[in-house]
Image (tube, rainbow, N blue to C red; front, side):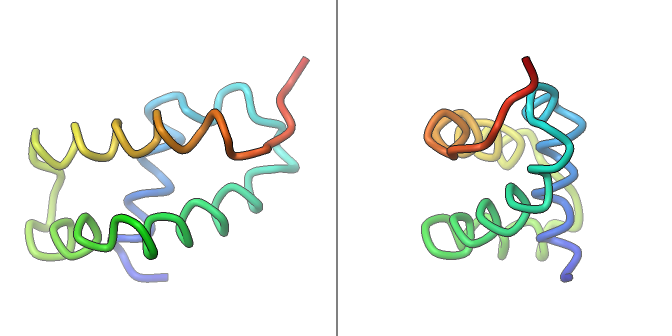
Length: 79
């Protein structure tokens, strides 16, 4: 997996977006979220690859993407 894709998945985990998601659903999240990013937000992958880090602007974009994506992701949550 390219580093910029790894960054997107790790970002979701360390920023708490996966805290309520069942562990068994993390693989599904990874696959479907990356497909979403590739199809709808490919520019952020290019930016991460070119910057080699998360700038404040890129961080804000990642947060916005996840806030939009997570409610409709259909992932099973911890009770």
